[in-house]
Amino acid sequence: MTSLIVALPKPEDAKGIKNVLVRNGFPVTGVCTTGAQVISQADGLNDGIVVCSYKLADMVYSQLRECLPEGFEMLLMASDRLLNQCSGEGIVCLSMPLKVHDLISTVGMMEEGIVRRRRKARQNPRVRNAKEEALLKEAKEILMVRNHFSEEEAHKYLQKCSMDSGTNLVETASMVLAMMKM
Image 1 (cartoon, rainbow, N blue to C red):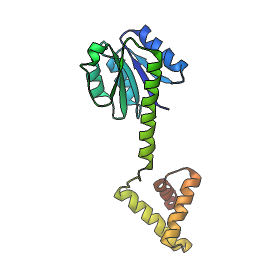
Image 2 (cartoon, rainbow, N blue to C red; image 1 turned 120 degrees about the vertical axis):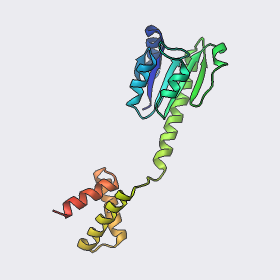
Image 3 (cartoon, one colour; image 1 turned 30 degrees about the vertical axis):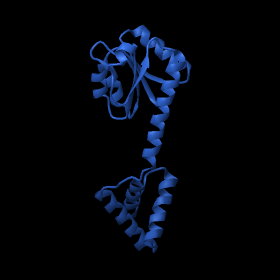
Image 4 (cartoon, helix red, strand yellow; image 1 turned 180 degrees about the vertical axis):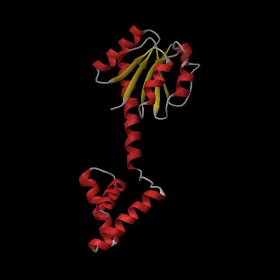
């Protein structure tokens, strides 16, 4: 699920937006009144959406956007006059006065984009460093010697153990090495 942080200068407005989002099926991670609070909450998360106004108590939207971790997008809510001056990567604008339907559909669209990015990142093959490659090679060599496997059979064995145990291939190779060296 995508993390949502609502950041508005007035706590009652932030809670109102949070309630609208929650009633429409979006879990809200936090409600903040300052940019520092938003940054603090976002630091522990991989990605998400910050729903905010043009200006918070301690910074404006552009300063907040610069401080957000990579993977976060911003939904900026402001008047048309202010939105005409706003720009930036990862910022979606929503005109005030706010319509609930517009808010819900925009957050939904942004969430779909984040989910798509996550899916695409998972599909990219993971690149292993030299240490991990050496670990895999050593585990395969031990399996090849002790169990008379070919390299392909040893690799398939590690993959199957990895899937069965729910660990990644490198962790499985480490476990095999630990067991075989006993």
